[in-house]
Image 1 (cartoon, rainbow, N blue to C red):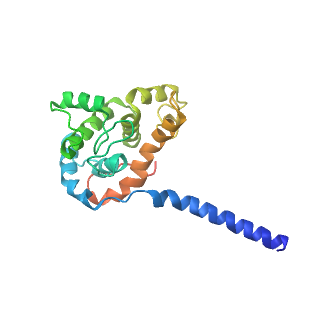
Image 2: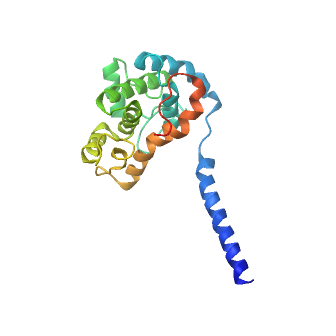
Image 3: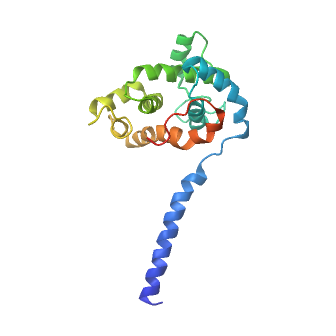
Length: 207
């Protein structure tokens, strides 16, 4: 094999590797389950109750997809439960505030509690626009409000969630930081468009 042909083959092999690298993560994504639509009305009603009309239905449905893939019996390796993947302590705290027993494995309870908690977090983050507010609330949902606040305090541009606050590691493991950085991206950019037909307010897709 000539040197020129060897270079062509190597270039083509590198191109194929890059192509498959780009395709594999997408192929590994779980598909939206067929029975997700069974919960559309419950998500819409609860979202409208907590957020008004129009409500961010696609984003909240996308969050459930990211958390559990609409599996009401989902259990994480760290003990999070149900549709909204509540840790037991968080479920108990939210239950006390809404005045019901904690039932994270009940889809109806999990949907209502997820929306209550997101609405509460939105009141506690403070950015100049809805796009940053919602993404910051998602970050706090995933990693805790305390860690979000530490990120914001250390950020070079504390008013810019997406490009500054989100990327600050406040003192957690690199793996947890990567997960938290990616969490609002996955929900608002990847999953939300797939629930756009569910109606309601559409939160920023590409900030």
